[in-house]
Length: 206
Image (tube, rainbow, N blue to C red; front, side, top):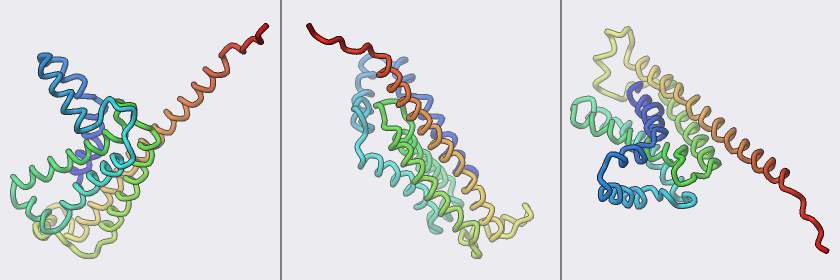
């Protein structure tokens, strides 16, 4: 669970804030830069005034879906038994998280900060719900952990409860994101009001 949270709420937002789509093309030939620009435009809508509502909803669904589908026991158990499936699982987690954080905090395409606030709030709720389910679970649902938790001084049920605690621990990151986006939005409004108040008054005509 700690690996999953590091991918979803640490690595992914840092990658988005690093803006690799801006930095990487600078080292490529002009032809490849143009091709990558067209691909990015088609996938993310970069360069448009703002993303539409359905795009934000889709970003949240991709993020939550990519996370929770893999927590179905049959898929999770398969990931624990196979390195290949485990790698696919982590790639899925990271991809879904990149889609979410791009929609929420990317500075490209002039994203609406209030939409990012809504995304952060929704992500907080779904994470809190999932973490609570694991924290209060009284049943071990992942078979490989039935025999691997004893060396850590944990029973299988304590192990899944601890996973829920770790999941809940990601909540403050979403909350801080919401606070930062709101603060930036309110600051921009104040700046606009100050700019308006400093405009010279119109002089009456002759």
